[in-house]
Image (cartoon, rainbow, N blue to C red):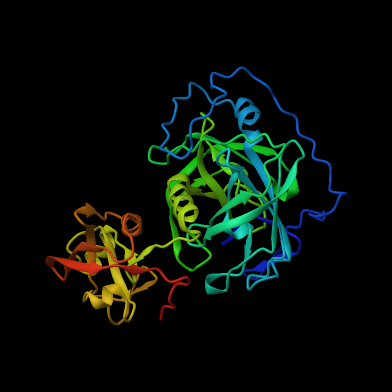
Length: 403
């Protein structure tokens, strides 16, 4: 399986031993760009035309039914096409120009999209595009500056350079806290350069971990079977009320298409990224400095772990916060169910009293803390339960290489 950013590029995307033709078949800067035929279905809506102030928290309205046509008629006006030039290829083989999607955040001209839409390279080698242009459904196209990007969550904040003559339609931000598997959703974007396209599906799963541009994982991602293909990157995943639940970001595929398995960065993560980018033009994440494995009953029995939950420490980064606090890594190697493990490491089960049931819970808990803050980790060392205080560091731009 390979995960691929869903952005349309001007060349072949190479990776994982396979090549996928993902060009949109047009020059993004050309006046001869392909005509986009979009039919808007206008239906009665109970939603007020006056949108809430998006700078504050929003409350999801209760949807009486899922109406894709109504969602499209209202919200497609706030979905944009993002054209990036001067990407310079980058380490990942991306081309010089690309096309993705985005959406309007507010009437000040802020646009949200994926970081990989407007950058090239990975880790410490990430570079911003030379120029970015935003194309609206009504045909207007204006320049935008990159306020900043979050390579860990794959989120970028753009700002329109000229608002004259534009009718901005901000999209309301929802919350992913109450998202349920089976909930109907709609994705709007520019798959393969076909701008303002609508696809529908359901939430297939929540709490997924997906690759970022840094080697670290993006936690709590939403999985959907709504069709997401190259060019959808940066576009919104919407609930029945027309609220943004996430930014469509990746597809997992063996054939190059995005049928059935797409992923979106959750809107609660997006909101956190946008707030930091707006304030400082960059983001910071706390850092513990370990590699861990999930625990399940059979594994716990095999390795005599005291509980069948938590994050089982396999490696500790030399000189990192966990190392400074004395956390213990596993040693040696033992294969169980065709996977190697390092026995004897600490088993983390809580952060400041908040339970770590699954391994991924640890990363989610740490999102609530800033670099430099101190947390109490509750862990088992052997059969002994204890608390360890750790002063968190700042996450590096590239994940340390593991042995």
